[in-house]
Length: 421
Image (cartoon, rainbow, N blue to C red):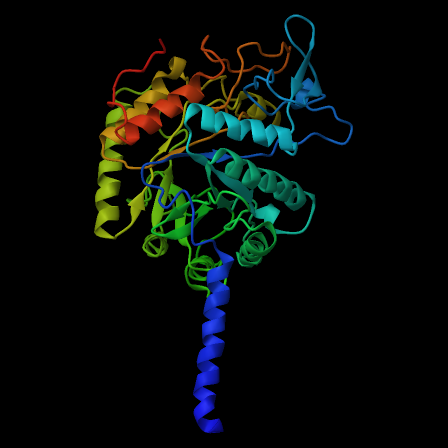
């Protein structure tokens, strides 16, 4: 009898493991696929110092756009003045009211959701991790409250590669699943799934300016863990790669190992910020041709494709203070009142894209933010800020909502920049 019972005990044990694994991620979500969605990256890294004064020294300003803070419940003084002599104020990403307002805007304007950036240093103990956990916790609550899609994006920026690998990312994902319940939030379940599995993003593979070698950081082990671990896996994976990943050229390392990695995942998102510009003749044709060729390669390898779009770029203040030998002009990739952003959007959708990644929701450091910013910027003898070409503060959120409707066929796709009535 005991010999006959032994296989039964083994089966029950394995079954209990399977049940445990299934319980880690919610089986249900309001967002079963990335297809048909417009998602943005969310930094959440603007944190008030202990003295409560943000950007106290105009000689150390590292942002190129200024947020419209009129709707924030809490704001903080800076060392800068507006043209009327009043103190310029800023928000704090670790305030719950700030995160809640941002997700309220997403729902109001029709942005489907965001990928929460989790930088490599946030996967290790310390203040940065604690602050990132706080922002993510509030974001999960707000995503549920406003029924917005949300997912984790691991940004490998900060990984040195000198004997360092992705082991801390594996530990961190276990923590997020167990402690923050990222894939099983309370209330409405909105964690983004793709191919019927929770989606996790890894950004930063194949870029030549990175100090790590993708062959030596355990990236295949990380992907295998996310996809196949019996308890924390069962996920889909998206990779953030260089624009010219397919040819392993230009902004991409010439290492075919990148293609080996890409073929293991479910989606790729080529990063195009600074790679296309309205100042270059026929650049939208180049963007279109890249997308079409990329999508063909992906289809042949059963990989989905999320084109990246962005409203413009400005890196003057940070370059002035951090890279004084190579100071960037204000608005080096101009927004043109929204025309450049819409040109990218309409080109991507017109080329057959069925999902979009917007860089970024709140990135005022590089002037790519689509959330509410202002033309009433601080006055400084040192710092200069990129405005909105006279557009209202919510114009780019509104445009993003129009993009989502066009992507899903709810409105006809117009190649011409939409104008509000």
